[in-house]
Figure 1 (cartoon, rainbow, N blue to C red):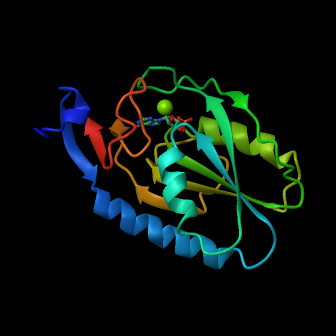
Figure 2 (cartoon, rainbow, N blue to C red; figure 1 turned 180 degrees about the vertical axis):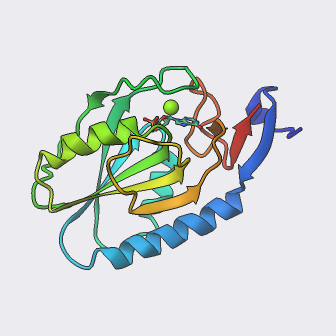
Length: 180
Ligand code: IMP
Ligand code: MG
């Protein structure tokens, strides 16, 4: 249906969010985040790898001083369903105590990754701890924390592009598509 050489012949059901829709929403999120943190040190923590493109756009739309660091948690492997196994592969070097922490996630599906990470990060006594998820599928039944900032309420389909992968493919699509 969509003839895009980046797809390597793989069929895509439909484009769910265009490049333009994404840019518009990211800039709104940036404004919202800017307005929400009037004072204090803000550390934006991107959860790799999925959030890398969203994070890079988002931080450029935040108009206040910030620091940026990353977390690497491995959960899915190549499967299209969540295993629930979350391992921390890279831990931020930065001290979290006393800082506002904004955890940036690409997509919330089962919510297991976030539950695990929020528990781990709150134990380090940040001044505040909030989540910004670009996509929220609203299927998580065990989600223990509110999503303070959400880009889009996403359909419960397997999505790729804008950082999201299937078996490490398609992260570089500038739009978000639903896989066949
Ligand atoms: P959760 O722990 O089930 O909420 O899964 C969150 C992680 O699973 C995300 O950070 C993604 O890496 C991956 N994931 C969930 N849904 C999708 C999807 O539709 N496409 C690609 N990756 C996904
Ligand atoms: Mg993934």
